Image 1 (spheres, rainbow, N blue to C red):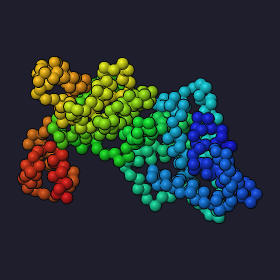
Image 2: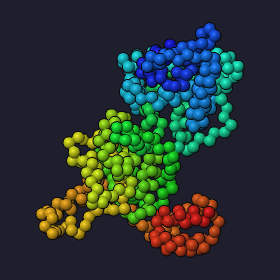
Image 3: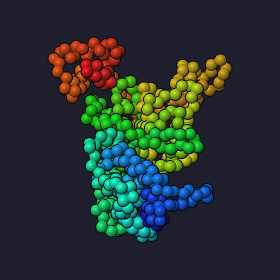
Length: 444
């Protein structure tokens, strides 16, 4: 196995994967008389292994494969599924070149055949010597694993299906060329790396060690669960469709009353368009300085990214909005064509404004207060599409309550239900979609 891993060029990261390294080291150790084995570390020190060390390392390796398989709900050949996961998650020059297109003909394709030859042998590697050493059937069971019952959380369900489909394609391939075709088709349909397996992300870490981390607990909301606001939905979908097709489109500000479904609309949008290469990155207000970093890492990826700023507003002392202004329009560096900004806010004007901002002079502190006002208003104006969400009418609120009650299977007389819904809205001080959902949930 060690020789196979050393042949990898594009997928060279597999050669330093802890699980494959553990298997490789164990297999090499078992080939030595007495099962004694020495392995030199990067710092020049040497680790010596005996059969107890090998046994322990193999149990750790089995645990890691089973842990990943439990997370993603894999069944069947867990060893092959693990390798398929590594291939799918790996971002390398070949995968980035092939994203959304498949492996192109030419030198990269010819070079990748060497990798595919090693991968073919790796996928079909005989692990029976490990069972013989352990005196068990652990690795045989690993190659034909039957789960008691899949409990994959919704957040990983799509990633699980994606990886499992790749594993089946790889194992059906009869030769290295078939392996290459399977990987090429995966790149064409899904892309590569974390963006191939997940749909939404957030920024974590410090400025020196920041990274995009998948949001795994996604709300499975879709447009069917959004009641009303058809005009707003149409505007947002048309703009997003234009963005995905590379046609002219606008950054969007969704503003209006709290609880009217602005954020839910964005989440439904991701669910609706995810198969067309849409990805969402949630950004908090204090992270706006990371927009330039996002520009750099996203501009050459073959996806379309929505930068989602939820519940956005700024106090007078906060200046982070200037990073946003620069990205939308006004900076020297052009915004990448594959990035669009969607923001929600309860305010039409995102930066807090005072009456004093509308006076040319106040207490002699600033000669041109009108300039201050223009500075604050200019952020909202840079969103080309502004969509208003207002509190629904009383009749629409009742309709939402009835529809939600029907979906939840509530057994209550219509008049009694609406009477309680009216009392609830008065108590809550509003009649929004959020209020209606909270009312239905209160009924248990």
